[in-house]
Amino acid sequence: MIRVNLLATQPAGVAPKRIWFPQEQRSALAGLGMLVLTATAVGGWWWKLDSDRAAVDLSIANAEAEIERLKGVAKLVDYAAARKAELSEKLNLIQQLRATEREPVTLLETVNKSMPDGLWLLDLKQTGKTVQIEGQALSLTYVTAFSEQLQDSGFFQRPVDVSTKTEMVQDTTVIRFVLKAAALDKNAPITNEKGVLADPPATPATGAPPAAPAVSKGASGG
Image (tube, rainbow, N blue to C red):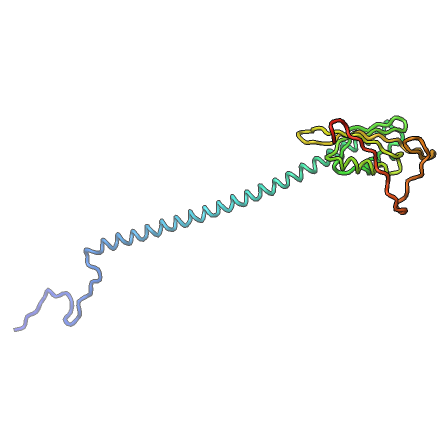
């Protein structure tokens, strides 16, 4: 007798299909897949935040460097403004003397060429042949250099008398000086401070050193 199984779902001789994951594990695998995707998304989001933070830190560092650079530029601007004010003061003084004093051009050129950078003038007046210059300097060295330059200019008689004292200007100690000199009369003989005839100053070719200026300090000390 031959029996036929009409309920068979696959042909005879064909191996049954292998089931990799049982039905009860598929839900767990789906949940695991969702967890992996979520972790990947969170990791990507975290990486983006870290990249953004690094970019912000770099921008802050660049901004701080730019601020430091601008501070240096601001100092240069302040220095240039101070120099401009100093030069304007000199020019104003020149304009005043040109309008009121005798032989102003030669006198002012001599004074202007003799001024070191660390010294500025407050007043300059001439009475006859006597010239009185008042000013301030950062140190006594600048005052000495100024008086030596005037003395060696050939425009003033020797010696050039200078009195100094210290004073405070905006919390900074400066040297206040008053310089008095007699303009040299080209047609008159050269005399010393006692009125005695003196030899003309030696030229640099002779090797003789120039006479030192007479510098006296005020009561407050310079």
